[in-house]
Amino acid sequence: MKIRITAGRVTVEAELFDTACAKAMAKILPIDASPNEWGDEFYFSVNVYVPLDEAATRSVKAGDIGYWPPGNAIAIFFGPTPLSSGADPVPASDVNLIGRIKGNPAALRKAKGASSIRIEAA
Image (tube, rainbow, N blue to C red; front, top):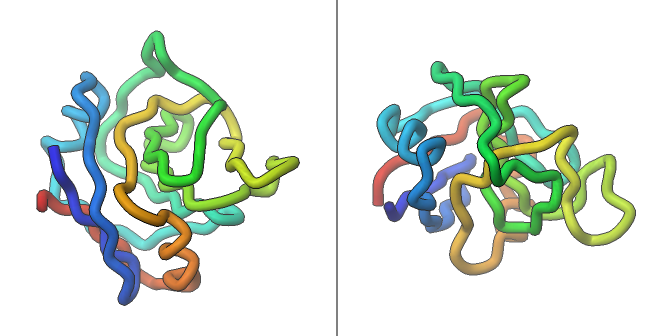
């Protein structure tokens, strides 16, 4: 499923994967939230809980979109996080990968400090 993510004045296109967790997120679109920042990661809570799936991982890349069960949160990775030792982001703990940004995820750096984020069907 194609989605659009708007943080402040920055919009990126993305795609949700065909997984149970991603489908659960698609059902609650559009999502409007106040994002938190953790390095080059936006994360925000949603009103749905999905447990970790069999493919849950801490190995993510810039552009990945994950769901983090401990915080009922969607995490959008666009660069290093405080746990990173290189250029790749490292989540606080395992996430379910639910999607991927198309194009350059670093564009979201221009949205740091944004008071709102929206994810909607594209």
